[in-house]
Length: 353
Ligand code: AMP
Ligand code: MG
Image (cartoon, rainbow, N blue to C red):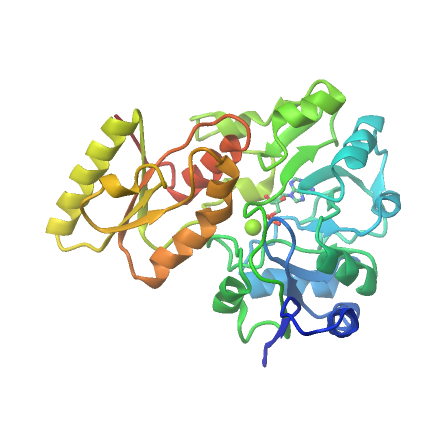
């Protein structure tokens, strides 16, 4: 299949030209096809959420396990009640505060949502993204777009159109290129299908921000436990995920000890003839002596670390790096989401120093 890569950010194109391009993308969606598109979190791989065959194509293109449900994206708050039932008042408050934005909420699904879209569950995940092109595509594509991240299952999520091209070229008819995304990690997921709301996936919207609006929120015990028998509730969180080709190891502890340990490990691996990558920060990158050193961002701005995480993992893949040693980051605020993604990318390999 020929994949059209359609730029919607280049200068010298009118609003009208961009609208025409997104209209064409919306037509593909309405006809049951797939379009990859930018959102504020990561690139999504979209299909008509109410068309079971169309949702099925997403699983095929990504190689995604069929029990892993898709998030349905809407462009107007009022559309929530068409696909969800028994939406509690607390969820409406969160929608009021954080939509459009990086927050996904789970409810009982309505009859119009096919089980193919929800991985066989009677619940549905819903989000309204904060990105003008995404919102227009949803509207022109029929109002309900099912979209997981636009990567091959298991790989780091795409934060640039080039990442989508790497994974999806020849598999889907169109990629809308909207440049580099703003946030860089997936939305926070809050489950409202049970009595007390529960965070199933940490993200840019933190537990503290949610508590401020609705009071109590729990965190899925499956996310924090070391007990392998306790599975996270979101089916997607149980798989190895976000993983580079290289073996990734996190080193955790005080700054000096971490640098020392990474230098020691990198030296050893390099001696064994391995290609080594190191993930440091603006503050620490000059302290490493071996391997390819990349700065993931600055410790004074955790959002910068989130924004660059997946891109760095893909860069190391392109360089055929075999071992990656990474610093680890504090777990307050958005740091919790960063920690969660890094642990999954590392298959939970952490060295404490
Ligand atoms: P992705 O869009 O690839 O970032 O993945 C969507 C995430 O949302 C996965 O972890 C899914 O398991 C989770 N998810 C979507 N719908 C539901 C649902 N109805 N119940 C629980 N988790 C869900
Ligand atoms: Mg994903």
